[in-house]
Length: 227
Image (spheres, rainbow, N blue to C red):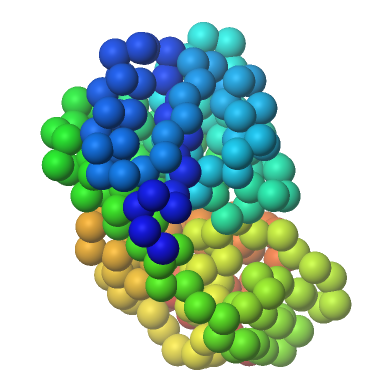
């Protein structure tokens, strides 16, 4: 896919931010749409199905975290990448953001070159995704990479993109311990930086949705999916 094939939705209540981000992304060839509040963002996302959604956290009415949670509940937006673009960088904001289903978190202000680089990194998976036909099984768990399906004890489990990718990685080699650094590299890549507790948040959410304790924490090392 070329840059012109990608649609980016920018959501912020400050017009100068919308102009800054939109200008720099359009200059690289991306299609852009904007919204100034959470409700308009959800309506626009339903209409255009963006590949990437950039959300401000501090917005009047529906804030970015609540907006993200609503977006993640929409089936047709399952594959959209959601990134917070905000001046808030406190740890509790990151954790709350990832809890709601965000994929990344960057802070204002940001230089145009870094902005474009991060967007390119987040969209890279759309360029390289291919039908693999790979299905992983581990005990009662089945993960179908091509169809993007997860079944546990015959029940279908809906997971957002990053949770699906993390579970797929761990199930690809049952009983093998993946280090935290390895998971960061494989799931987020070298161009994306997230907080220390990010993996913990995702692991906990996957455990809750599967209702299993097969996801094991190896203290001081990493995680594994135990058959």
